[in-house]
Image (cartoon, rainbow, N blue to C red; front, side, top):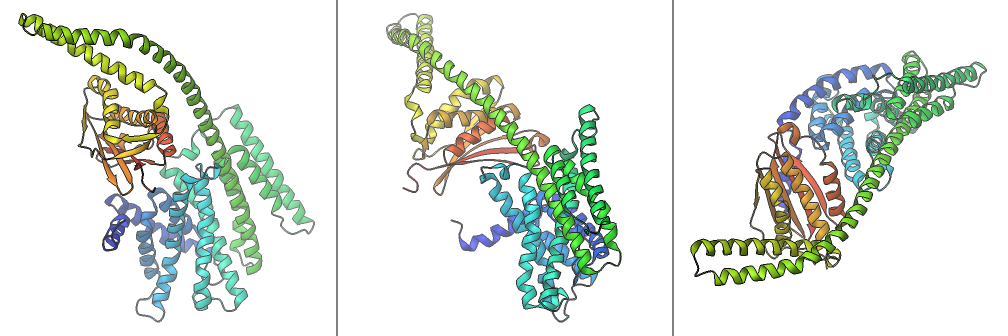
Length: 531
């Protein structure tokens, strides 16, 4: 538990912008100022806009740089709105105006934090990228408009609307404008920041892509023609054909194609809503467009998430096949070890006896006997460890001393570290630290992480373990090139390690900084904790 007195300073340190964040915040303030004025073209009920691009800028920055920037973004928006004259310090109601300006970014930050926190725990496609961002993109505008409702009821003058119906219309404008701003602006910004993964392969033109492009154009064109035909016969402007078209394109070709489809629909629809339309008609068009945009992007994100899940399943299947081969190899090695353990034990006993009787002999003979004894003892210890490693008893969970577990890992990777000319250091470990688990699986997880560190380090890998409340934290640290340190992921070995650690009720995290310092940390429950 963190002491209450130390909680606030710790929280302030966690949300304080870093030096690398300052250009992003400054750029956001400028972009927010520009986009806020652009939004006035689609001004709706009260001071809300039916297309608010600033919302897309906001969630793109929060998602790419993390929700820790929420206070900084809120301050940036407060400063911009002060420059715009929305907030006039000292004027009547200026504090309420500040709350009204700060509330949306704070709500967006809370939603992004909640979605990113909950997504890893979802066992369905909803937790697979890019679905978490798609969910957050829909949830944030809805949450922001709902958070505004109590304040609007308490101070209706804040929305510039009088009466319940106009108040509801004003908040609906707010939600629709933010939804459109988020869905149309945030995806391309994130693709640009992340190295354009959404556009990867789009530039390659082959027969398959040409057919896909033709199919998407045919579906979307047919839907638009049908909508025009229905409108011409007096049935209004139906949204269903466009909705079905973008949903089909998103499900068939992914979120990039889905976003491009909704962009085409938006480019056709938005110019008509900039003119002098009645509020109800403009709101209806934007609500229809918001439905198309949300469905299209969610469908595309779901398709991409399904594809990624299939890739992960295929990789896990390959790992299972490899595991079956390893089980066969394990059975063979156990048989071989059993055959050589008995004669090797005899050799070790005889070598020890030879060292004793040769102690008074010629120094050269005594030294040779001692060397034979040491090598035989080392081989015997290695065979015993391998026999235990391949035995059935270790498959059962048991209380494992952390110090002994780390010693076993060090013995297994020691030859690799020596071959790589890497110094493997182990900090002093409390002998009273025990974890409950399967020794071989936990050893495998740690071996994988140490091997990752050996392959990427600059000559030194350290292992440390300490108690943190009811948990044990085992850290494997190394230093590598800064660009390699900031690269996400830990490879297949890291995926296996994560699966093992999470199956034991723990977590695996990887922390890196710009200097190249990397630490992979396993956090496991203490044996007996919570009992």
